[in-house]
Image 1 (tube, rainbow, N blue to C red):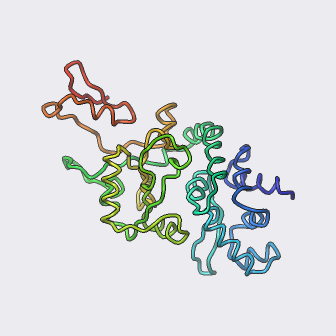
Image 2 (image 1 turned 120 degrees about the vertical axis):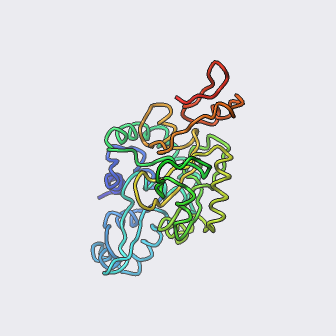
Image 3 (image 1 turned 90 degrees about the vertical axis):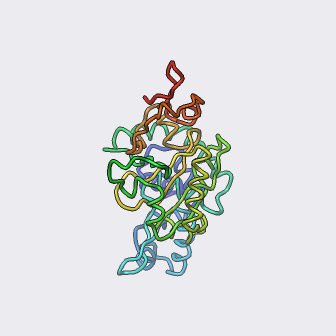
Length: 298
């Protein structure tokens, strides 16, 4: 198998067989030996070494490097530490872009992918998924408690209920660079924080620091997003309308990559001053001023 075939096979493993750019990204992040190692996954160091007929020490060093690069992941099993390759394009995107040694060429290649190939792939994903993979959650603000709020719907409770928090740079903003919003704002929680700290792609925060960052993100007009599932999410993204790989296509083309919050906004007409700030801050055009100058919700 020549080197071109190696990188095409890696693209196939993350369900991108027709991509012209994903093989180029793998070529920038993994040499031929590393590519063969990725293709030999999943497995423990002894298992992969046996498949490749290479010394275990050499395979162990390669897997440690691939873990740091964000293309290999590991978990503890009864038989030992087991490695697997990134399973999807989104996982490859989110992990590799914050690789501490990522080059400008690598980031530029991701930008090319997002501009040339991501919209087509995202369209297929939005049609195939039974529900969007992410959900918006509100910042902690006074709301009338008419129903029980699930922990994953409440950013404060999500942070306070996790055992560990870290922060990384926003991969979407690093690649797109279309706004001047804060970059170091993606919160990793629980196992996500463990992973971030071990591979040195971010830094640990106290829960107080994390909550303060959430408030700063709210003041900057960013929107809080988690995985659209019950249980602990591994991340809390703070997204903008200009760079987010989900929001940009949701706004421009209606691709259903993110669900709204389970909260419904209400306008207090008596308190509304017709300043228009809510209309400006909403990314999705859900608010406007009526003929009397009072905000109304679509």
